Length: 300
Ligand code: GUN
Image 1 (cartoon, helix red, strand yellow):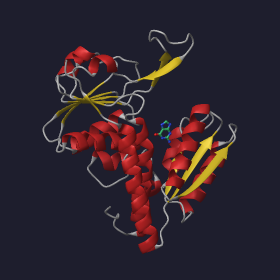
Image 2 (spheres, protein in one colour; image 1 turned 90 degrees about the vertical axis):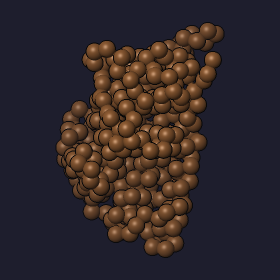
Image 3 (spheres, helix red, strand yellow; image 1 turned 45 degrees about the horizontal axis):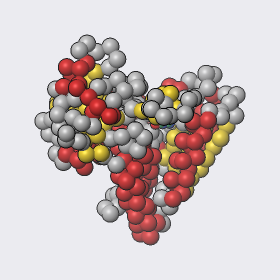
Image 4 (spheres, protein in one colour; image 1 turned 120 degrees about the vertical axis):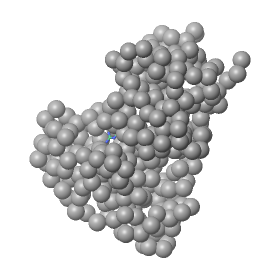
């Protein structure tokens, strides 16, 4: 039985973060520039609190300034928009991230539209969405950027490869498809309503799963030797023999135990794509800071 190479996202992300740290050192030493990232959290969603804490910690570890704004769950849209205006105008802030989801009284679209596109390190502003789809130089959403980095590291030039993206979200699926198109892949976007999804999968040299359905993609759907990137993060009851009753675990959108026998390389869940998202957020913040200062990004 052959087995896929396991792509170690944790190690990969550690390398990206170390490179960002080196870039920040150069920016400080040669330009007196300290990139700054502002993260805004409205409410007390436990998962969001963990993400925000981890983002702040990683920002400081990379040598950058971290500005955290925690607002109560009853915050009005006007109050949040006022804060965004202040952050847009603050010279020490190069990147702004408003953690999603937002409470019901606040329109996500209004908030994303209010962020200065040059500081939009999530890449969610319509200007950045448009730039990505027209081949321009905007800011690219973090998770798809991380996936592309891992694919290029594994495969080198992606030209001519057949890529299937399963999932059509604005945060992952659609920008992922644009990035793969930009890398000269032949791209198909599938989703939960796609007919004969197994057949679509079997044609793909690159399969990116971001559909949010636990272990939906089976081992015999995968083309032998394909590179599989699993963006799924689904919490399920731990169904392994011997697991304590009531315990849960994280699984991806791909049935890893089956797929690992067929694929050429695969990202595990956890420890695959997840750690790359924060690493790319830091990289986007350096990009935004350099562009704001009109200097080239340091090569490290
Ligand atoms: N919530 C879940 N994922 C994300 C993300 O990538 N960016 C933001 N801002 N919020 C999120």
